Length: 550
Image (cartoon, rainbow, N blue to C red; front, side, top):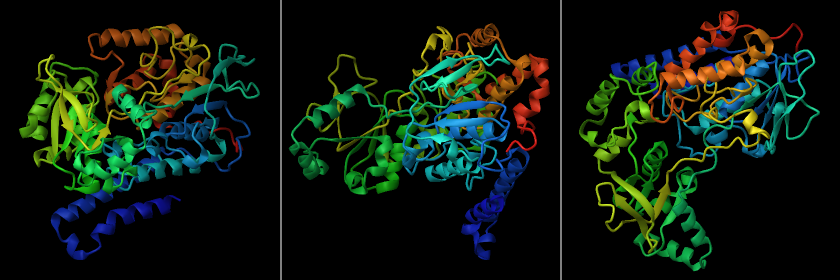
């Protein structure tokens, strides 16, 4: 399998360099060497850090415990693979049907969607081998599925099984201080821990006015739709509303010759603009208009720059943070520096958009960036009513004509209301994201919320911390002496809130990847008795089960 993967990646890397004449170009030759180094780096990571795959599909004969994983997305598959590799039995509960497959939110985005950051910073499992720096959706789904199969997780995944209830079960006789958990009322199986991997993106988010408009259209005579099909390109029909995640289903004919308005200026909005341009090029009518209620920082797709930004040890604005903002205005924005947040929001106060091309599209006149609040569809149905930021509050709304309105307002945050006694798991003041190490329930360490408490950060939700958090959980199951008490976990949250007091969005509502790494290292330093586990937790070395486990 490894040889096949390396061969495939090598072919992807070299297919554009088949000609010896191409290789004679110094720039192309350097690119070729860089790609080989990129692949070699990944191969080295696999050799040193990939946990062993099961020798058979059967359950381990002597498992150390049983883990329930909620969600078969990227984080869920990775977490489950780590559990299996270290001799814990696992069951994945996935609400979607089997034909949808695994992959979570990546199943529901457009095929043109891809990583914003370099894939070397998106290694959600050590066994990954990306073919390029910025893979697209299908390659990402392919890698998730490959890990799922390699670690025999297909037999351990229950599709069409939404989790409706989680409640405590009886404590084990040999470990009375520990909880067990019952899923969906089935007390025939007790789980030693639950990893909640519902993520941060659920159903597509629509503003209330968009929902109202679509409901009114669905209750109107069907003639409206036919009129729209006939006259939409000329602006005599009603505008068509679609969510940015549905652009794959929008044919080029839907967009060609149309006036396109994108509502939303975050990553979804930027990607929507790029997807429209990729589909129809310059064949939209006029400029694509982006309605930006608030500005987002846009940083380049540069692995060195992104790593340096994520390396600040405190996830909040600091006295020298303005240096980075000045640097971005001068080197990345340049003539478009006016597009940086005009409300004084700093780079360390919200998740930035990582993109190289969007600003160039604005420069070339393909996109018009409009600072305004969308008020709803115009009464005529031929556009969006807005109020520009610089307009008086009592001024009349302005109508932006549109044939297609793309709602790029992201996704709803999934709930975790399946806990039957939520206050016993997430008491007041210690709810998401104010959790122990930002991912563990402060009342019970056997509830792990990897990436499900995430709000904003500079870094990634799909990197090596997934395995580290999973192995912390496994360590706490294996070693009663390493377990934190609820008062200690709350104290950790309180200390972080004190240190980061004044941070906009809350102390744990924004963090950098360096800060997260510091938390994980401090987990060992403040409790020297945990140091014996450090190479297992941080690198994944050791704890593979007794001989003959499988």
